[in-house]
Image 1 (cartoon, rainbow, N blue to C red):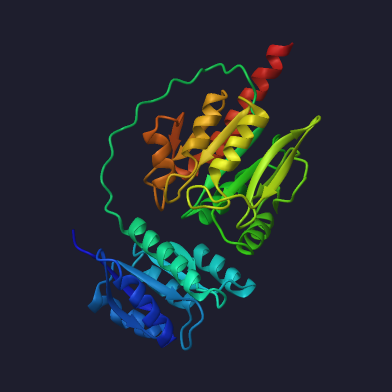
Image 2: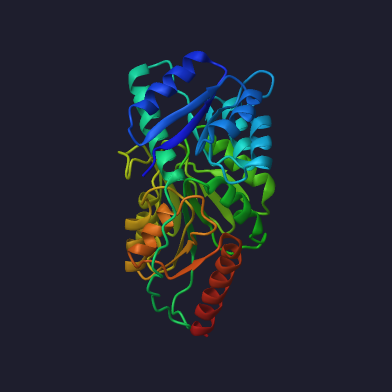
Length: 353
C-alpha cells in the first residue's frame, strides 16, 4: 500500500517544520510538500498530487477559508484537515470551514506543556489522516435485526452520537425537527471546549428547537436539545420525577471526552427501553458499547449509512456488532426519527386507552 501523501499549508515555517516532523514519524505517511499560503497551495496541488491537505486558517494573501473554497471547487473529494487555534476566533473560523466543506480539524499545540500538547496533536493528526484516507473496501450487507411493527413502549428521549463529519451532519439534521418535537434530544459531538458552545449557538440559530450546551442539573424537557460540553462527559439521571443532566470530568473513554458510550449508558439506565439512539458519521468505535446497553434495555438504534458518512467508523462499528435496527442515509434520518417517535408515542397512548 502506498503511503498517504500530505501537503502542509501554513504561513509559519516553524509550524510547517513541526508538522513535517510529526508526519515523518509514521512510515504510512509522507510529506508531499509544503506551501506558505493559499495561492502557493493551489499552484502546488496539481504537481504534488496530495491525498490530503492540512490547511492553516490564518494566512496572508489568501487565508484558509478562501483557499478551502477554491479547493472544493477544483477538488471536491480531496480531504482537508483545518489547523486552528484553540481560541474563540479560531473555533468560529473552524466551524465556518467545516460548513464550507472541510473534512475535519486539529487544534494547534498550546504553549503550556508543549511536549504533551505536541504529542496530543501528533496522535490526533495521524489518526485523522489515516481515517480520512483509508481505502473504501466494500463491506458485506449486515444482517437485519427484526424490529416489531407494533412496538410496546414509547420513545421519551433521542440520544445522538457523532464525530468526524458530525458538525455538518447535525447542522443538516437538527433544523429538520419540528417546533413541537415531543421529547428532549441529547447529543455528544466530539469537540474541544469552546467549540461546543459556539456550535450549539450556531445550531440554535438554524433550528426551531432550542439548542444549548449541557449544564449540570438542567432538567430535560420536550423539544430541548443539549450538546455535551467539550472535554466533559454528559449524562442523564432520574431525580425524583424529573430527568436531569450531569456533567463530569471522569477519565476518557475510547480516547474521548465527551464520549458517546457514557451518554448512551446513562440514557439506557434513566429511560430503560424508551430510548432512540442515533449514531452518525465518525471515526473510531465510540457508541458501540453504549448502543448495546440501549438495545439491551429495549431501546432502538439507527445509524447513518456509509455512503453519506465522512467516516463510517462509529456507525460501521455498531452495524458490525449487529446492534443497528436500521441504516439510513443522512437525508432520511430526521424524518425517520420523527416517524418513530410519533408512531411509538401514539401506539403507547392507544394501548393505555
